[in-house]
Image (cartoon, rainbow, N blue to C red; front, top):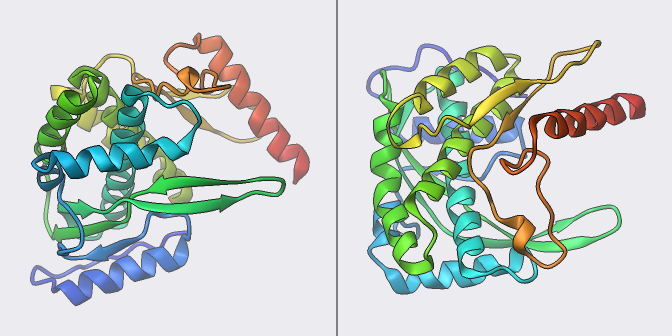
Length: 265
């Protein structure tokens, strides 16, 4: 679980921010790795957008996530993966009364996930974070952060800007719901996320939170506006929250999942 940090002073130093980040990482090992301050070994989204050779190399590596990924699917995974790391930390800092995220950088990292019966190599995106105390306009911050990268990915892969912005919107919702649920602040988190995606480039009219009819506890999931295109890979299918699934099908799948979790407890 996370811990709320109150009373952050106006003159926050980089070491102070690192202490906050380290404390949050210690309390939730599933958070994307992050460090304080922009780093030379990481690229801001604008810097990655301006280096098309590196961007293409990242797209090539992204192909390890599933067999048979075409260029547009790699692009969907790439923008979705970066956006989820950024939006998760944006939510963590906001919901723990920590300094607000202003700018980020990232690097691509290959890693192995080990399950009970299988292992798979995937890609993740550790971050470097620049943050300041005080209120923030997250919609503007995210639009300025992702606009150049989305334009470059569109040119490199052919995945439309609209498709990418929908994936960013989904990441805002997913990041806030994940962090809010961990903190016991799901409704507040969803309210903030809805405010961010209500207008501008991330507004798509489809990304939304859906409550699962459940007698013993309250759960929500994000019904997505974008598509990761996993169904186009070898042996792939529609994700449970896929925009291509009907709402009743989505709800049934999530209800079955939570019922199985409770039955195993």
